[in-house]
Amino acid sequence: MLTLHSVGYSIQNRALLKDISFHLGQGEMMAVLGANGAGKSTLLRLLSAERSPSRGVIHFRRKDLAAYSHRELASLRAVLSQQNALSMPFQVEEVVMMGRYPHFSHRPGRKDAVAVAETMEVCGLSHLADRNVLTLSGGEQQRVQFARALAQIWDRPQSLILMDEPVAALDPEYQQQLLAITKALCSHGFTSVAVLHEINLAAQYADRILMLKNGRKWHDGTPAEVLTPSHIYTVFNAETEVFINPKTLRPYVMQKEVKLDASRFNSLLPLKPAASLTFSDRSEQYQNIS
Ligand SMILES: Nc1ncnc2c1ncn2[C@@H]1O[C@H](COP(=O)(O)OP(=O)(O)OP(=O)(O)O)[C@@H](O)[C@H]1O
Image (cartoon, rainbow, N blue to C red; front, top):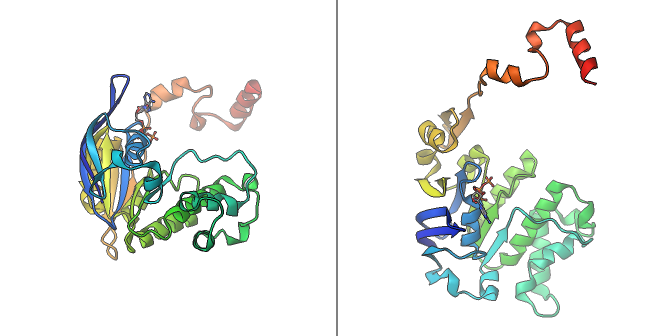
């Protein structure tokens, strides 16, 4: 479905991605993990053809990604990016229908209406169909954008879904729901790549995890292969304990509490450490601040 051969991307002589190779098969659900600035969004921009690699080549369905027209790509892959903010008062249904623009020229047809109705139902948005999208909460708007992306490829199994931090604004229920929908689609032939910050959601849903560090591929494999304490420490500089869920055999990562250098930290704070203060000390200090 998707193959990267030694892909690199540079901007103003700075290499943001270096020598990345991997193959993603049809039906796979890949999570991309990495610290802030590791190059995850940049990689997604290359996979969506928003930007072109400076080195190497990306093959999508055995053809150079650069050889696809915009229209062809729009009917084969959908993108849910981090910046989706709308400024016009469209109705929710109209925004979801925007996903169908590549499929009709003047008016939406029956297939388009069905795709919109079905994706809104799957995403639990049917009751919001005629709401002004600007009046929705951040999480609701994110779910509308997810439905728009799904509507774009709804009737095209074998398509690719690319998502950059799709669950960042969602509550726990909808985080699970969005990834469960994506996983269900992958079991029907779709393929997906999602940039995630939530390690345990990646562990729970992804077939495959790609870990990036400083623009390089650091680890690539199943959640159990990739999510070890030493790999996580190398990539995130975070101390963790990893347990295996006996039912799913998937890892569960527990982060250890971070201990700050107390003497240095306390010297930077405006107040004395709370433990050494009496109540009257504290109220006096707060009064002084206000
Ligand atoms: N247009 C640009 N010009 C210069 N540097 C850039 C540009 N775009 C991205 N970068 C840099 O490239 C690096 C990778 O950025 P990218 O957005 O891909 O990281 P990320 O892994 O998605 O990070 P985050 O988790 O914080 O979203 C960062 O150091 C960023 O500052």
